[in-house]
Every structure is written in C-alpha cells, then in structure tokens.
Length: 429
Image (cartoon, rainbow, N blue to C red; front, side, top):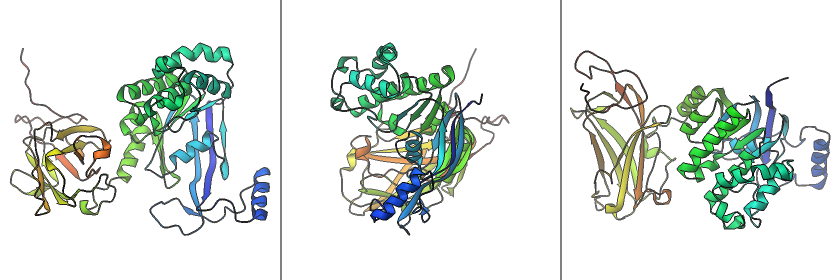
C-alpha cells in the first residue's frame, strides 16, 4: 500500500478581480455546466500571474498555477513564501473550503484545519459544544470525542471557561482551543497556518511539541505555514517555497529555507528606497555604513575586530525622542537571531535634532565575537515599548556584513565554523 496520503496534481486556482460572476446568466450557466461535468472553466482561459505589486492587466488572476507535490504519511511539510504567494489559498483548497479551477487533490483520511483565529468555532456556542460539534463534523462519535475531551480542555487551558461562549474568548484563547480541537481529534492530515503567531511563547512551544508528537509518534501528516523560519526548521522534514502562486523550490527544509531567504534578500537595495518597512514613519532610516577601527567604510570585518555601525536617518514628524527604543539585531543566513543590541537595556537616551531634521545613530561593538559567516542586519525602532503598534521604522535584511576568519586566539588557531557567537572567558583546572 502506498504511503502517500496527499497528492496534489496540476492544481490551479483563478479568481476574478472585482465583480463576482461572468456578468451574464447564460455565461454563469455555462460555467456551472462545465463544473458539473468536471471540465475546465470556459472563462478561465485568460489571466495573469499573481504578482500583487503590478497593476492588473486582465479581469482574472491566477492565485495558484500548476501546483504539484506529494506528502507521505508522518511527514511534516513546511509551506513558505512571502505574503500573497498563495500559501493560504493552497491550504483552503486542500481543506475543501474552496474548489480548484483546474487540477485535483487526493487525500486519504480526515483533514483538520486551523487557518485563522477561531477556525471552526461557532462564537455563540461554548467551548464544550464546539468540541463536540467539530468532532461530529469529522465523523467521530460522542464516545470518541468524550475520550479526548479532557486532553483538549487541558491543552487549551480553558477549563474555567469551558461552558462560556467562545465569542467572549480572547484571540489567543480561541487559537488555543482551535488548535487543541484540530490536533487531538486524531485527523490523518493536520493543517496549521500562521495563526500560531497569535499565541504566547508557552503555547507556541506546546503546539510545536504536539505537532512533532502527532507526526513522529502517531504517524500523522502535518502541513505547516509560517514566516518563522526557526519554527519551520525545528518542525518540518521538508518544505516547498511558493512565489506568485507557483512552486519555486521544493526539497529538504534547510535547502528550502536557504532558497527562500536568498530570494528575499533585499540588502542590495538602498535603504532609503526600501518600501517593505513597518512603522508610523515619524523617523526614517536612509543609509547604513560599517566602519572599521581605521574609520574606513567596509563590508567585511575580521572576527574579534571592533566595528562601528552608523545609521543615517531623517525626521518626518516631531516626537518624544527620550521614549524611543532602538534595537539592532544580527541574524545568520538561516534567519536565526545571533545577537541584539537594545538601546533601553544599554541605557541609551537619544537626542534627536529636530531642527536639523536628520542625524546618525551609531553603535560601537568593541569586538565582533562572531564566527566566520554572512550576517544580516535587522533594525527595529519603537516609541515607548516594543509592541508592534508603536513601531517607528523597522526593516528586515537592511544590510549584510561578512565576518572573516583570522588568528583570533593569537596563537595560530582559526575559529571553527558554527551557528553561535563567541563569548570572552577562560577555563582553569
């Protein structure tokens, strides 16, 4: 017997931009008749690639085009790609929430989906009622659901509110309950979208642990979508990269993440021209420079050497600079955080020259205790606290700096490669 539990063949999904329907009753009937006979939509022959950065050239857009892949029993497949790449559309097709325009999806067994906050939860019903309703929809009888009930409630952490309508739950509590229902009611295929990001750190750790147990222990299949590459790396056994509705790369997890991050590398774009920044724009960072100990602008630095990082900015609107928190982070080429320099923890209070309207924030690192590798810079700036709603100007992959190997220990030894930083210290015995 084949161990393939999910087979996606020539899958495509087309949407009409703007109005719904073909515009006439006769054409709508032709579309319906083609669907009944299993034929291709006669009005889906014209369309453009799903590039949301370009103006529409036709009335149709392919959200997905010619998707093909297989997933084996017990496999955890990561689906990664930038916003608008087609990830959620693919999961909705697999979950049978919407139908494909072309192609087929063949799945073995029950599918449980957690695609958005509160998926499958009726807001007027209690947690208890929702658990039994979801179990019944998945074809389980009352005895089977009751056997899992206590585990679901315990995992969700909602024992006190189990008879409270779900509409009174916070978004985090709804995600906990939705995930617990999806994971514990023993589906053959578990689909989890980015919603885990809504939960707290403890819940994310529990959820990833549960998904590992479901796949490795119970031999069930998991489809996992996330922008958190650390979670994808820790959980997934393989991954596919979607780009503009098509599979750009498929392979093992490490290779897929590397391909995705390289395709998303925007460090060669001038900082002032970057449009993928987040924040209210009261202050905009315009240029970044790395200076070595000789005050020379560099792109490379030897391990152990000092470096100064200058971030040029211009002021768009006056604000209370004493409350600004600035964080400069170093990430490796797998997007793992290697080091961070938060201004509030360093005791820095910024003095912004609002009259001049521009200036430089400088960070001096006395010794680059990094192993030889390429490192990406991420800058974050907040007003008052580090919550997302208070961002001023935050940008990923601002610039890339290369750390070179050298006689770091002053005895001829070179630094070993690795994905962790060095720290000063000495052993004795």
